[in-house]
Length: 230
Image (cartoon, rainbow, N blue to C red; front, top):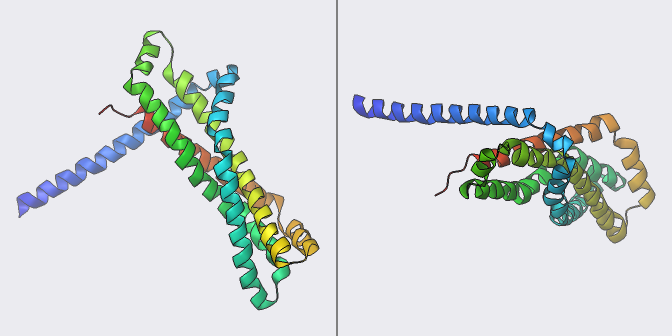
């Protein structure tokens, strides 16, 4: 019994220390990425190319998903608000739900599934085919040349994609609420404009999307760089 308990504790300790070691390695990797980010700004075309890969190529899924999320919000929100005679507040419900929470969160999930997985696969393939080792042999820092441009492209793209997601969601709520159901258009827009605060709502949404962009891209580039060929 004591031997089984000791074995269990040793296994648990190995897993915990392994996770802590990996977290520390990932933190050092993030610090190295930030330190070698000068190349990304001196040769900004590298970052622009990755913005196209991570941001522009993600537009379709972001816009389509935002449209349908907004339409669902408009439909379900109207069904709830009309029970209390507050259907004119539909614009407020749709806008605040998207700008504060759903826009940054859902856009980050879509960004991780499309761009994050692609970044991990691309860097992992470069490591498996020893392209990163070849760069080191030619005195080219792979973190500065490969990782940093992709990291900053993700950080820049994420807030823009979240803003487009929210804008398309508001348009979807407008289509359902005003065009399809018949909510007063003036009330929809005027109450939305009067209730959405720039500092409390929009800025907080942007901060969330930037944080999500940093986390998603950091994990994506680290998992690709730390991958091992099978």
